[in-house]
Amino acid sequence: MNESLGCKLSKYVTASLANEFRRLLHFIIGALEIVKVHSFEKQHNIKTDGATFVEDTFSLYKDGVMYQPTPYHVLAKIIGYLKPGPEDIFVDFGSGKGRVVFFTALRELKKVIGVEMDKSLVNIANNNLANFKSGKTAIEFINEEAVNFKIKDETIFFMFNPFGSKTLEKVLGNIKRSLLDNPRQIRLAYYAPAHRYLLDNEDWLVLEKNITNLQCSVWRNKI
Ligand SMILES: C[S@@+](CC[C@H](N)C(=O)[O-])C[C@H]1O[C@@H](n2cnc3c(N)ncnc32)[C@H](O)[C@@H]1O
Image (cartoon, rainbow, N blue to C red; front, side, top):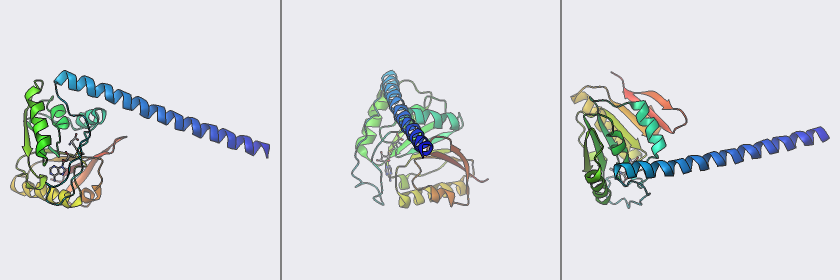
């Protein structure tokens, strides 16, 4: 009886300590992220922080998700995995204030494009662009509904859960069609993949990687 009470007590203490440890870890990761945001954005003279509510009066299917930037520590791991190079044209669907675009353009690519439906966010991104002197790569922000963005020769598509399944279906259809016109290897990185089943169900796509510890998966086309 006593033994089982002792056992229960020790399990309780272990679980409580594990919980406290998790909370501490989250706190430390949060604090490090704040430091990273400040130092990166100060160094590059941009401001992409701050979740911003976007009233979705712009998108075709009214399923847009509000602006929230990808945390820098997540972005560093995703771009570190993708390793975009001089032959790549990178698109961030729902680019907001431009964080993903600027971070990616620090590498040498052919071009980095941000597609964003909200004009006021595109204005902020373009103001950032006027201040950003560090990139090795051409940058363009396009004020456009993602479904209407004409896909031609882009090779890497990034999405931080920007929209719902209706828009995503159309965007995937556009990418697929572009491959018929211009066969090439493409990759699609989806962070916080709320509608990943759509990509999993596409027979022209194959899962390349679930990036460990991040809610990010990468698919590529079968060629
Ligand atoms: C979660 S935020 C991601 C911001 C940025 N990609 C990042 O990771 O830092 C989603 C963005 O997608 C934009 N968006 C939502 N639906 C869209 C659509 N149909 N076409 C273009 N942009 C859209 C929103 O305005 C918002 O800025």
